[in-house]
Image 1 (cartoon, rainbow, N blue to C red):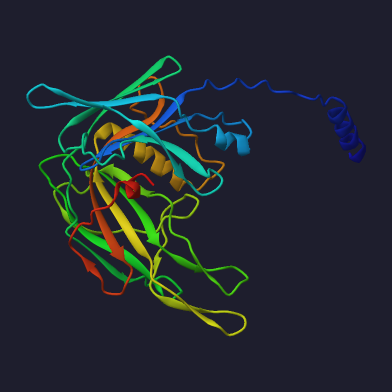
Image 2 (image 1 turned 60 degrees about the vertical axis):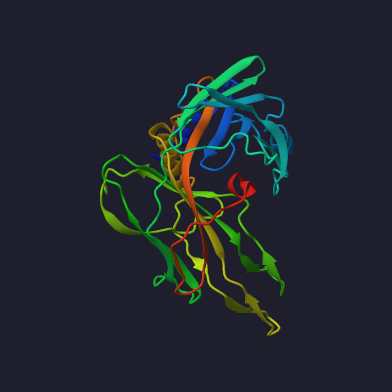
Length: 336
């Protein structure tokens, strides 16, 4: 029997042949991440798609963003007149490996073209003689009743706290809700050193997106967990002011987190895109999860053009904090 096994292995090994797979090259497409929200001008980030098996190096990030497109946004008023704007390109500093990225927006402060709830906004991008178009609606925003900070009873650390909220859903219409969060203040003890380092979030992170089909017309308690640093299911908590002791006995005091919550109403096509992205992110990079083709509302490209009926809340993570009033951010707060 042993000789038979060896014979089988010998035959199998001798029949091995080097196989080279000729994978098809991915067609280059423009990827749009565009948004317009109540009270702010539109902002558009354009990039190129990357093939799944293509290598990623420093040149990949340098060549990722599109810097020479023509980007136009317009809407129609009640009297039939048309308001439009051609957006300027700006370079925004970013942390490695990006270092910087390009955004098309209006930072002049003129207020020439500002998003309004209830209006439809049309997007046109011209790049390499191709025309990419889309449209979206800014729905009417709906506020949270309140937000508050309370202890995370499941966390081992005494300084871990949650942000929770109460929301009353309007039962007369379908609501499509998207929630993002961003730590604008966060401190950590530097690893292997007795130093405090500032590590706020560079940009808003997606918590979830979906329709109100399961809670239409009801009031309920919800919570806003901290998203993982590198994607995945949001299940973290935030820090109140606390101390950490160094190896030499020095005690460091780390100030509490401060979090921006972005609570939005979006239209259904946008919701389907962001819901798909949220589910894909929640897989946590599981190699056995099924690949997901995101539903895009971009004609001639990839990505999404979203109108946000947005309300912001600034939440200092301090025990027993209760927030009722919205917060007004700056434009650089919202697209970073």
